[in-house]
Length: 437
Image 1 (cartoon, rainbow, N blue to C red):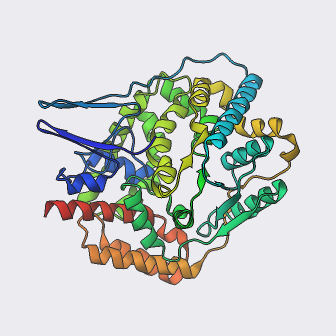
Image 2 (image 1 turned 90 degrees about the vertical axis):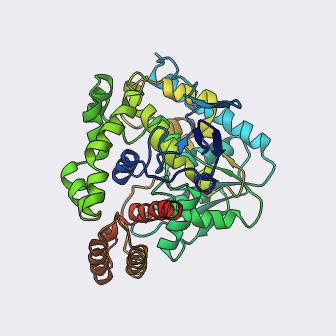
Image 3 (image 1 turned 120 degrees about the vertical axis):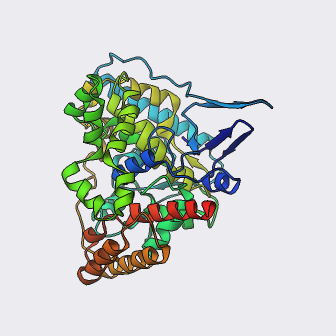
């Protein structure tokens, strides 16, 4: 799960947890057009892709070997577990038991005060409830106010959960300058994510004193992914990989015109949807025989290649424990067939059955909140300045300027929905320019 990147030539092997370090060592900075075509539509890379054609991510359980004559990287040695015939009630019990054991091991090994970043969702709550059941509550929980208008109920729900369990709860404010935070986040996530800017205050907080963080990475994708869909499942198992790719990329009728208005004509042709479909279909095919191919695909793509960059990139200032990645637990959850988890409620049922005293506590309903018009306008102005300063050959500066001007008037964040991916593209282009000019 931890990021590790590599490049080999007939005379060299370069390996680093940092893409910037590989570029500085002389690895070519030419862009991977198919990889970028996928990223611009879904916000993460798949397989071993990165923004740069000559730099690959090490495959899961992969191996790098070299001799004075040559270097080689082999594919991952990991294989999906056999399809389980376990019943739904038994799966719930096994899930709860495995997770409690993972938490107990993690707490036993912790050498610093334990902190749980608490959201309004299932994963961090499961960590906290398991600790409570073991009589080992964390030192405190911490929650970051999201950028408005996202997740209006997140802080309120997290506060309610912490209070119910009697845990001290620390609230952090978001960074004021969103675009600057996005650019710092891009370096920390190796230009491989359009998410995680919201965790920058956690990085600041955990840098101040030693803590051990228990992070909920992978909980829901293993147990009740919102990506589970019967039609998509049939595409996977029936070998309709291109239609499956089209579904994952999103509605072409809305996405493609939107991208065309943001990219230069040359960039739109270069990073076209056909490339994205072909690349994504190839990756989907690798997971078609999994017991639950949708869960497997998103576990090894979005979760491994993007979501994991929060604990293993942004929060690399402190030790991070990820109990949902316990080997026994992962094998169990990835062995469950689609039918066992298709209703997308397995995690909820597990929490309610194992911890009935807390079943009344609400979850964040993802309700939108009020706009921060001042913050939106500040971000729009910063994006415009960045685009103009960059003299980009990939982004249509006039289109960005028009959108930014509209946002400066309206203060509505939906008018700059594309901000994270455009900032990422500008930063990738900047690295390309620095190492090829």
